[in-house]
Image 1 (cartoon, rainbow, N blue to C red):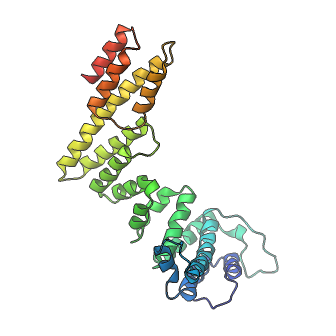
Image 2: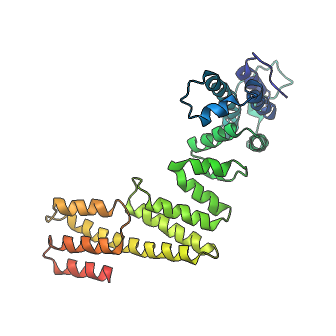
Image 3: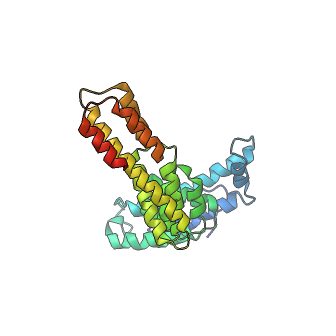
Length: 290
C-alpha cells in the first residue's frame, strides 16, 4: 500500500482508524516519506546541522514529520482508546465501543511490529521520542531494532536509558561503564543519586566477566562515595543547629554536588571541625573516615 501525491493523508488515516484498519493506516502513513522524499534530502539536511539554507531538505523533513505524526496518532489511539460514536446506519462497521481491551492489545502489537520493521531511521527517532514523551521508557526498551542503541547513545541527557538498555540485553560491562559516567557527570544531581548510580554500576560490573579492573575501580569509588555520604549527613545534622555558618553551608553544598576523592573528603572534615566544640561530633567524623 502506497500513497499518491497531493492526497489528504491525515484524513485517509483517520478513516482507516474509524474502520479499525489500524495496520492499513500505519502502513499507508509510513509509505509516505519514501514517496515524498525518495532521495533522502531530509537526512542530508539533518546531517548538515538542520541550520543550513537547504530549503528543499527542510521541507522534505517537515513533510516526513507529517507522515510520522499520522502513524503515531494511530499508536496513540491504541494505547489510550477513546470510544467514538458511529452512525447506526453503518451496520457493516463495528463501532469503537465493541472493541475490547484485548482487541486493542492485539492491534497494538500488530502496529508496533510494522513500526519496528520500518527501515526509516528518522521514523524510528520519532517513535522513540514518542515513547519517552509519554513516560513509557520501559516499553521503549522492550523493542528489538537496529536503531535503538544509536538513538539512546545520542540522547546524552538520558544516559540512564542507554545503561538500562545494555543491562536489559545482558551487556553488563557497557551498562556499568555508562552508569559510572552518570555518577561522575557534571549534571545537576545530588550525592544520593550518584551513590545509587555507583551501586548499580557495581552490580552490573559484577555480573560481567573479565574486567576486574573496572570492578575494582567502581568498588573503590563506591566506598569513598559512601564515606562522603556519611560525612554529609553528619554535617547536615549540625547545620540545623545554632552553629550554622556560611562556610559550613558551602561545604555541604560542595559535598552534595559531586563525587570527591578520599583526600578531599578528609580535608573538608578537618576544615569543618573548627566550627564545633562538640567532641562527639569530631569523634563521629573520625570513625567515618577510619
